[in-house]
Image (cartoon, rainbow, N blue to C red; front, side, top):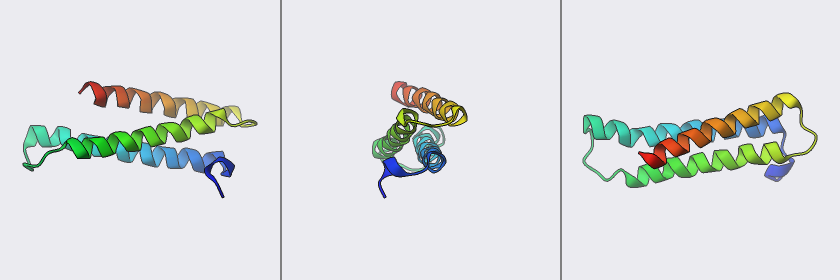
Length: 94
């Protein structure tokens, strides 16, 4: 079964999981800069977090573009897109 044929609620849950995982992974380099736990380059870790956030954003956009979805699902997808967009802007400008 392809992603486009899945239930909207399942897709939004997956989008949330990928998004929150990406945000947490992007926070690791921030805390490492402040506390100096590890002396390794943190750029790849930040990149993985950003990729996960982009993937979550694409799932939320795919849900929003589906036909015949309820208004509640549309609102959830819009909120997810807004939160992920703001977090991506934050981690890009950092």
